[in-house]
Length: 189
Image (cartoon, rainbow, N blue to C red; front, side, top):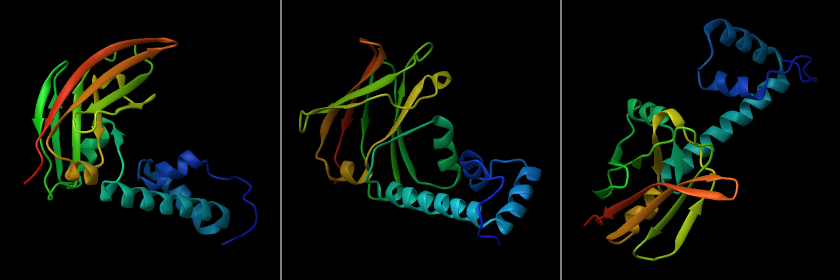
């Protein structure tokens, strides 16, 4: 393996696709050969591997809130992740809970997203009444849903409460409510 500077470094995005197994076989084989010979690209791939492991560790512990795409959620389910999910209809409500056996808790909010370029989430829990805003969340406009995975660890500690969520389209200085939702959370005994 050469430690000198790479004459044709592999793009970071391509290394990520390689690591995720998303490249066609000929491209994968080309990168396999390159990585074996190139210390610089092998080191960058090592950084991606370390970062992905750190993200997995934080995600598995349930310490963070994550916005997912429906496709990514389906991939997690197909890999055997124990997901408790609740679908909330547009301007509707749902009863929900979380148990110690759950590995991931997901709220799926039905919302019309055609023509929307930015979505913010405003949320408030009746148990603490502080409003929180997540700005410019990622979303797939064609899915017509926002998929939210809250901190599992935090949700397992919260008492029974109502959680109010508003999805807002932001266009410059103007905001438009896309949908309002209520989650009636019952603490696990």
